[in-house]
Image (cartoon, rainbow, N blue to C red; front, side, top):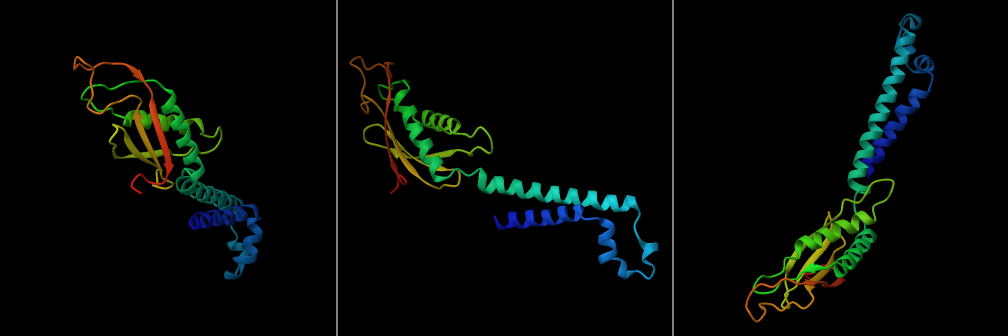
Length: 199
């Protein structure tokens, strides 16, 4: 952020120079270098070019500073945004119906968790200004009841939450009486706590 402030300060200096009468600047700061200052004085076109040059330099510095600020600061999901998105994702996962997994196939939670987190982040994106980049969900392994745990953080690995997702009614290794894979609708049971799943 300090580098951004330096860039913006330099841009402000160039903008200030563009606003000051260039003829006055010449006579106050450059004329003393010449034996005959009147003969060395720049033309009106040269003065105008100096002002345009200063404005372009100011805009460039403001633009570079703004880009760096956006990349480093504005686009980073903060702790409040992570918490809000995680709670919204939990609500989405628990309310939406999914196709249950029965038989020897273990449920795959990754797609639903990623989709719920994306939807939750879009729901809280501001109407104006930069939107948060989003969240990352890293699997922390399966649980004994057939569920899976995910450590959710922002894209910089900050503000972790641990989600545990399991199908309602899922029995690990279970199947129906015929031994065939049966399809049915179910929902997820989701628990959440602050901190990494590894802790």
